Length: 427
Ligand SMILES: *Cc1c(COP(=O)(O)O)cnc(C)c1O
Image (cartoon, rainbow, N blue to C red; front, side):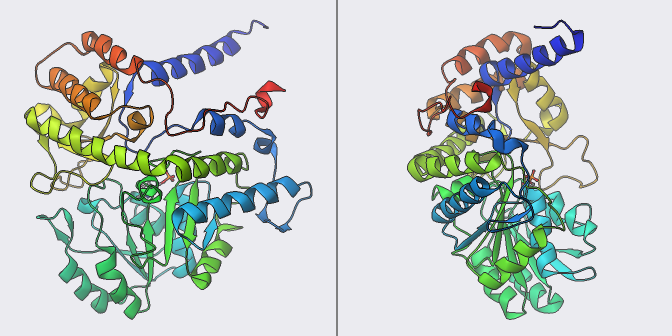
């Protein structure tokens, strides 16, 4: 190959990333996952280079007959596994899905009730993010510290006082389901559109391990397709209501997306099929692992959030590390040991202190997908204790981390096929 130093660097750094994150680290970032080898191979197909503005059958470009076919099929598979009647796969991220859904039901100057930050609201639900960009007023629902959740009685009162256009639920630090079923009828009574943001828990929902928000009364569900749902990075809007869905779908293009990154479509369709086949086993294993990791950490003296509440019902575990140097230092130390987590604000943190919050957030979905089970959760808790509590040199702990990771290198809950004749790389 031609020797251009930058070219060598590009290839080297990409190989280093692959080796480090796929073979040497224990990845516990709660918003990440990996595609199966088959999904990954179709991701590198010719679809990656094409345009198809519009919807199947109503395009602005020629040459899209196979795009129409794959988009229609992917959408129908997504409906099958989500319990939705309609789905739009064009949002290129969860945030874009939120933008389209919010804008379809509210305009500048309207009011939105959102879950309090302490209960996990994402930045896109706030004045600092998408809601703010759209000029929609953000009003936090009341918080109940005992349940680490929305205060249902006070929130119901607030719905009738504020009479918002939108009620938005679903979260980012998300341990326990928000009270959607309890609030949705009241939101409907004042004419609000109920939007449930399933970004983090979409894979748990499709695997039946988390309440389906469409059953609980959400008009629109938005999600990322790459967090607990192990597909390509992207977003989706789901619904059972034709009117609300059509409005959301219409606001995607041309307001927030022109071309929708078509190589996502076959990868998303394959992931949907994998979830249809293996989703239940995967989602149940994720939730069990999260619970076990929380218990293992608590047993070793960590202050795990949600004590008395069973710690977690999702893929996430949150730990208060304020007495162990704070979230920032703890996350850094763990990275030196090749255990990857993110620092995170906890419900009792001062919201202005984003730089050094007191917590870390852990997600077990990716390691579960690589086949780790409850025994490995114990081992991870022990490694975290050694590094964060016992003063073990993180560089020295790396060897044990690599050994543990070394037995879990291939993606489970996925089809065996490699699809090597499909990827453009093989042409
Ligand atoms: C991650 C997240 C998003 C944003 O999704 P992207 O796909 O990263 O744009 C939206 N809402 C919630 C609750 C999230 O956690």
